Length: 235
Figure 1 (cartoon, rainbow, N blue to C red):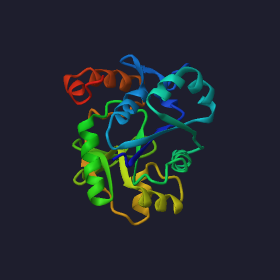
Figure 2 (figure 1 turned 135 degrees about the vertical axis):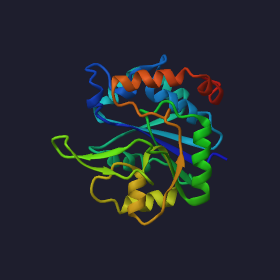
Figure 3 (figure 1 turned 90 degrees about the horizontal axis):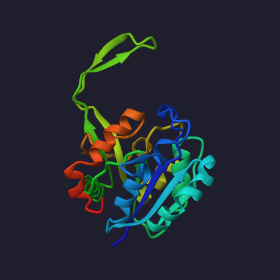
Figure 4 (figure 1 turned 135 degrees about the horizontal axis):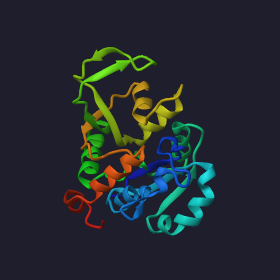
């Protein structure tokens, strides 16, 4: 039963990655472009029937030249994104096939997702209607001023750091996007603002989002771990 579509968010500017030659999602990690690690995991999942990657318009030629074969092999469709993340996801939503019952959104810059975590968040989403991977914040949290002076220590009880994938019943996500306002930073926020509760499913800290070159090195180390190999035997 292939009833889930996954949208890969890959339209960011990668300004903090600071590489003049490659955006983070297109750079190599353990021999493959970053986006391909999670795309391959999704392509092998028995419930995922559609994968759509949203890219920046300026990357269209690059993607066609360098990754056409990879995209075809993994059955990944490409859509052009917009100025902000939610514009890109909204563009991809228009490409989701009508028979799809569940829609997930995943950062293409998170290559270390495991099948175990994916299965866990899917199971909770199917039970509740909306779920995301997230990790409880365990360190002390400080709120600082614009000059980096500490204003207060924020109680960390109940605070979680959002991850992806974020999985929603298709009708819930579509209805939420029809009402979106402002510039939300993730899809869960859009669904929350529409009045639908979202459940957090604890994901490992290894499900890192690559932002800097140091993140890339950490991700490559996670990709080589025995646990990663067991969860994803095709890696």
